[in-house]
Length: 166
Ligand SMILES: [Zn+2]
Image (cartoon, helix red, strand yellow):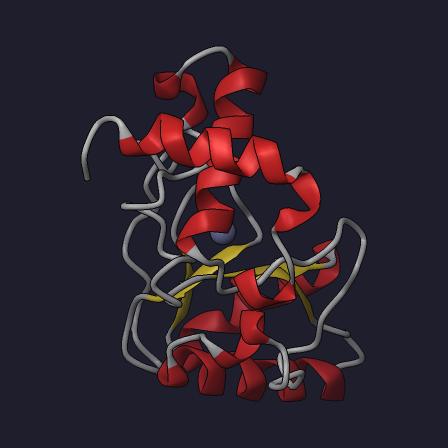
């Protein structure tokens, strides 16, 4: 990635307004809950097929336990991730601090379709207890909602990293 490209993209994003990122980028509005079965949405359709299947299976079984599972965010385009990262830099005051909360477009597992953010909290709890049966693991200690396929179904989840920058 050329160093001038990031400021240029930021300039373009700013010029087009924050509304420029849309459903095609995997954008999910704050408070909007999408189901892992909403496969017509790019945010869900662009997930890694194995991850999507695992999340759907887990959501089904969670529902049997009376727990509704939704996704607060799933796949995100590079453009959308870049916008989130730039926002985090302004919010946290620097790239190093921002990277603890939002990955760069190059590092984000959401951009490659290998991560989902799950809600609400009781669904996070459920997935923390039962996720390994589906291969789903919380991978960052500071993000109880962020899950990835990180073990074989029925396996043991690897130790969590403290945060996304570690
Ligand atoms: Zn995440």
